[in-house]
Image (cartoon, rainbow, N blue to C red; front, side):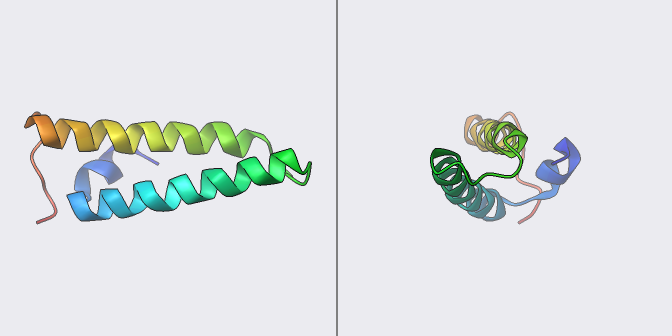
Length: 70
């Protein structure tokens, strides 16, 4: 996900995206454990997206970034 797209999202949208991504990561980890995963690179990409969303949420909390999507 692009940084600009994250900047345009509201805090509620970011929290929803974070929850969805965490669920998807858990599912990918189960698939990896069962050796059913098609593309293991998806885990790395998803973890990076989660980190970006958490960073934006933390910036909003600290007041570094203003909430654009009221």
